[in-house]
Length: 399
Image 1: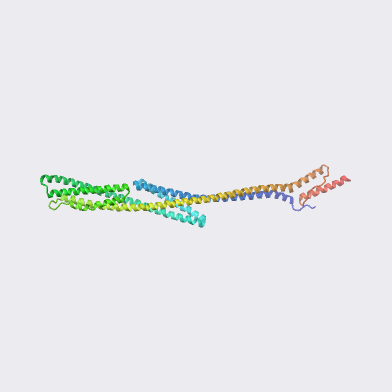
Image 2: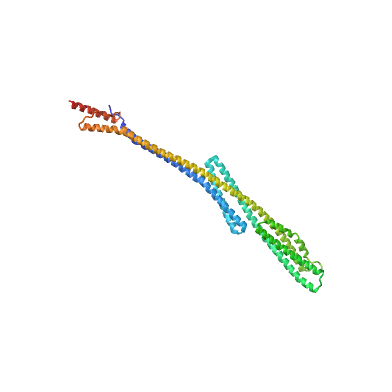
């Protein structure tokens, strides 16, 4: 048997040593690829599902805080509630932009399924903007009502004070007339003017009290009902004017001033009632916008939570699949390793060990019976050479 030109046995050793390494590297690459896929899925879940859920929750929280401060401002009229409501509303608009950004990322990631998310974000943005406009309208209307109430109270108090002062002056004049003159037409005319002045003061105070009660009860219709008492106010003011026979410049001036203040009071009361009704309507609009906004925000939170749960379930399934894959690769690698060791020992180690034992027996002077090794590689040639040496030794010993 001739020596092979190509070193076959070293190639077998190289394959026996290198192939397990290649398989192990391939298994590690497969596991690393699976882990990288898990990392990308986790990152996408954090950016899309978790980000959307957090943005929706923050938006709902800011909407609730805005609603709370607006209610506080509506109930108390304190300015710090309005300032806080403006801050919270600005923060809600910022959270709305964050939610739209996360919804845009969701629509880009999910494709056709993300169109509903984008539509939901647009609808919620429209509702938040409508809520903002309704809140601004209520604030402006509330300030208009406050100005109208100030003018109304000033006119009412002035009318009551002027009427009381007029009645007091006429009471003093009536005492003088009663002393100088017997009861007659003049005395009755002064008494009537005192009665009308006191009646005007009573009407003014009654309407002011009705407005205060309506404000406490948050019922503008009570003020509208009380305004019916102002219908005869102009007639009473006209009856305060002195007759030509006893006309005096001071009396005419006082009567004219009372008539003017009575007209101003009537206009201020009507203006207040109108502005208050507008405020009531704006409040209803704000309540509806608040309800729609909070419902849409709650729905967005629920849908984001559902998407988050779906994403987590998919991610959990992916992790379970990757775990099974990694364990399968590990078991397959161990099985291949054991089989490869058995095959390497059987086909590489055993022939060499047999040849070594055969050569050792020849070296000690014994002639072994046979060598069960064959092949066309270097080990086979070595075994054939050892058998030839053994035959020659046997012939020499036979001679």
